[in-house]
Amino acid sequence: MIYFDNGATTFPKPQSVINAVSRAMRTCANPGRSGHRLSVRSSEIIFECRQNTARLFDFDKPENVIFTNNCTAALNTVIRGTLKEGDHVIISSLEHNAVLRPVADLKDRGVEYSVASVIEGDNDKTLDNFRSQIKGNTRMVVCTHASNVFGVRLPIERIGAMCRIYGILFCVDAAQTAGVMPISLKDSDIDYLCTAGHKGLYGPMGTGVLVINSETTPKSLIQGGTGSFSSELAQPDVLPDKYESGTPNVSGIAGLNEGVKFVLNKGISNIRAHETDLAQRLYNGLSKNSRVILYTEPPSSGGHAPVISFNIEGMDSEEVAETLNQRFNIAVRAGLHCAPLAHQSLGTAESGTVRAVMSVFNSAPQIDYFLNSVNKIATLTSKKVAIDT
Amino acid sequence: MEKNLIIFNNMTYLMKAKELLRKNDIRSRTVRTPSSLRRGSCGYSLQVNSDYERAYRLIKDSGIPMTGASAVDFG
Image (cartoon, rainbow over all chains, first blue to last red; front, side, top):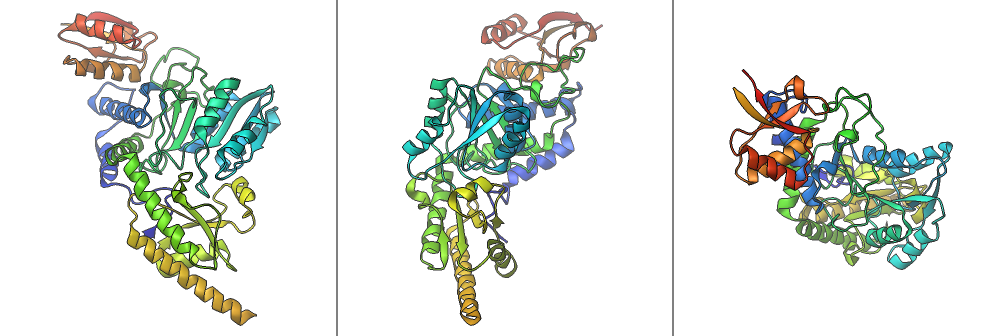
């Protein structure tokens, strides 16, 4: 199968990741609980992954790298663990439900939220839209680094600087950009960086990361055994223990460690260049077909992650994806991509879109085959429409 | 037999310290902390057989939090 559903999870995974997961299953036991070598080995692997993840984000505190089940869990920890009654939070118009649903849920507990519109290609206007939503009780801004549907990148450096000036906490959802776009936490205004481990970091599904770059630490949402301070009733305040109760996903983290090393070895600038070239090739090809609808500027314009959303005139996005799957053996995702706000912003809330996201394992011939397939589907639909009328 | 232990309050700090010692050519081993010394700690210590004082100083100077250090007779 030719796989372009890398926005959901990257596939395939590097062989080193697969080997590490298998090795961990064979050679690791519960970390931080016992003194035998199988337990200590687990602790060493987990620490190595914290170190490598910190390095990836140009960060010098591996203990502030928290492992979670996914990006959603990391975002929930920040949002639910920080905001309290009377607080106000600003999110962007391109947010995933991983941000939208927690802030909407907190409304019942007296936390209000506002949505700042993102204007593609106009960072000044986008920043103004965030600024105009600030109120006296604004405690946090949470926004995606780049839309999971349209790839539109937000000016997070400028939004972060604005937050610092106003004394507002800043949380970034980097699910689509970690491993693809450079993110440095050195001298950064990002307080909380949340990401998936299984997308651009090439780790196993069921892994996520929260990096805390702030003295303000969220309340832990889960309490329990950490292997530390065991005689004390209170949850330890020390990181990462505060957020990592219970047995961790050792085999997943072992795989993530190799995924992060894979990204570090390839180099983010190389990965980005490769994926942007492919996304641009796809965009160029699709734009030549008059029946294909595109929604953004070209990905090579610099303001985008390698994510392309499109539709074929007269066809349901799900139907296009299903035809690509059944007839052409191509994997994409269609529909709303868990981001209804983003679709409302670009006028695709009813139809959804077909989404193709690049990974390092995609190639130019795959893009050409994809374009051929889309053109065939569009032609067949065109004939069907002509017959129907 | 007496062993020199440096005690930590969580595993991540211990691993940071172990890495620091490794970079300074000091060998250490992760061991469970004896129950009598465990209060407030993660239950783990670094056992340092040689260069113990230098190891302790390196960790202290680096700012990695320690719970304590002790010479323990394991019998």
